[in-house]
Amino acid sequence: RMARTIADAGGNVTYSKMIRLGQEHVSLMHVSLPPEKRGELIEKLHNNKDLKSLNIRASSLVRRRTGTYQNAVAGLKIHCVGEDRSGMLAAIAEAIAQRNMSIEDVQTEIRRGEQNKRDFVVNAEVVATSRMDQEDLDSVFADFKKLKEELNLRVVDIRVQMDE
Image 1 (tube, rainbow, N blue to C red):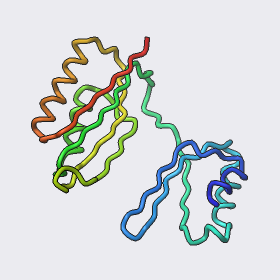
Image 2: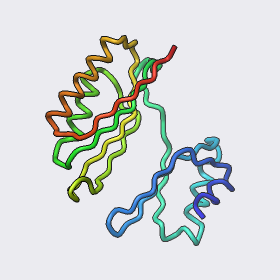
Image 3: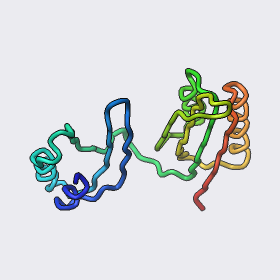
């Protein structure tokens, strides 16, 4: 019903994530629509009797004004899996930041792994705004090989896409 209400108000769901957290069900949606239709959409979401119990909150995204913007010239998909322990995401994020790369999207989850132990899974989409040659890539791979050993990760998979 929420997606229908959004569509009827002229919106388009461009990203969504739904998850159960304990007794709660959480949905995150990015909706693209003309700015002049924002108020109408929020009113329809709040006034729809079928959606009242969902406690819907809406906000507008405003592009950050941090100065000049550089286009991404390289993208990396980084997938890591290891037995769950404190600090794993922090260590991975720090390794990315130390290379002046930015995390565009990161998803984490806990799942049952080998011998029914809790695995922590990280999937990160990362961009670089400066050219990376083979030496740079080899250095990133070496950093993550070291991180694999330090965090006792079973899987580290890095996929790279470079702009021509």
